[in-house]
Length: 222
Image 1 (tube, rainbow, N blue to C red):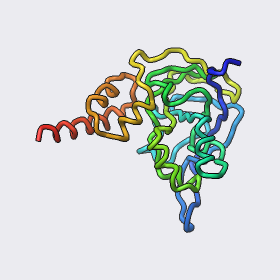
Image 2 (image 1 turned 90 degrees about the vertical axis):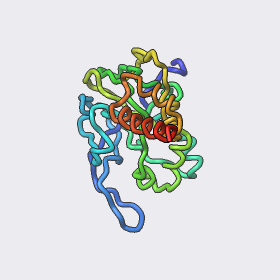
Image 3 (image 1 turned 120 degrees about the vertical axis):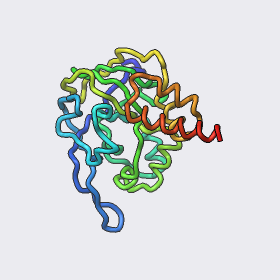
């Protein structure tokens, strides 16, 4: 097998449930997912999968969460422990799909389904709580190794051994990693405008970038 062919490392789904973390506290979250062999992917997301915080997660533009398997090696080395399956709440842990190589608007056929990359994943503190690591969220943002989200263009069944086939690269060629760097540094209005101009970008990101551009421009005008 060619080394650069993208493959599924883990296919996982899960419904929101109670997560117990430090000092006896708890929260309802969909981050805890379990490995499955086969599952149907609909426009709204995978069957048997959902999010608890509908404001910040889920929706058609964020129906699928993918995370590069390669990063696990770095994180486990830094943390000095093994991370759980789908530790970042991803549905698809994938190989040879790094943030630097995957671009907004790229389309992939996975099993019978077709997805389109819409945004970098914006991580939240639930990751630290779930993995019992208080540095992981900070490191994801510092590195831009956040994983990414996708919308579903064609529904269909995905199996754990399904092929991942790149159908089309988006002509803008703006990588997820570049988007993350711009998004988290929050100081380059021109770069934000270029990202915002990508038609396939998630609507939520378009709106957030517009607010940031307006804010940066108002500061310049003062």
